[in-house]
Length: 124
Image (cartoon, rainbow, N blue to C red; front, side, top):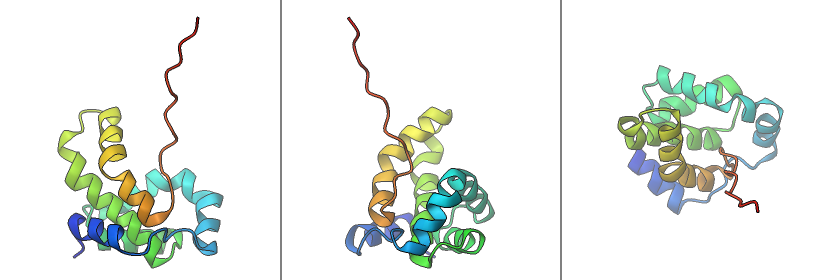
């Protein structure tokens, strides 16, 4: 079983950007990015956020390479272990995932899951 700590160490030390090959990019830009939250939520719930199970679910349902799906399974495990207890609402969950899990996922996958937040601008 791949734990969050093992996934984080793998992402930090292994070659990164596992989702940038042509097969994964076709999936991501055709439908994967738009359906990412739903896919990860569904597979994560089915697998109780266990990284390997979630990765295999993602691979079977969407067709990502195993390495790319592994990054996604790790994101589910991280979200569960690092953020589930601190989530009070969708914004607090997003903030936690953005700070604790997304940087590792981005390095592992080469993908960004959050759009940059608009910066506060002063008018006048």
